[in-house]
Image (cartoon, protein in one colour):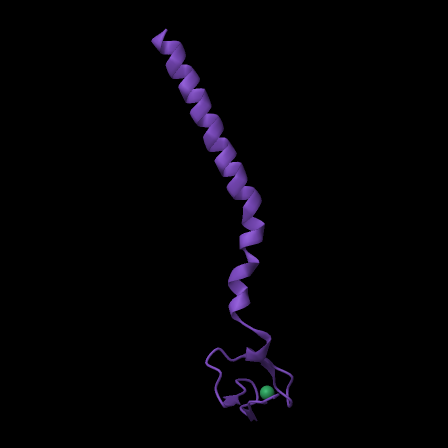
Length: 78
Ligand SMILES: [Zn+2]
């Protein structure tokens, strides 16, 4: 009697764990890209001299290209 109840409880517990893992695995592709939304389009600049793409997280006024060492002014589109 007790052994059967424990086996049933274990089976129900295992099925719940499997459902929870399945739900987490199924939702994981939705959660992935959201972390990259922190970099907005305004922070991405392309060097006009060597076409090197620079991500400017600090939103600096002047950015220096790490490839050709040229300075770029932050463009303000009002
Ligand atoms: Zn450059």
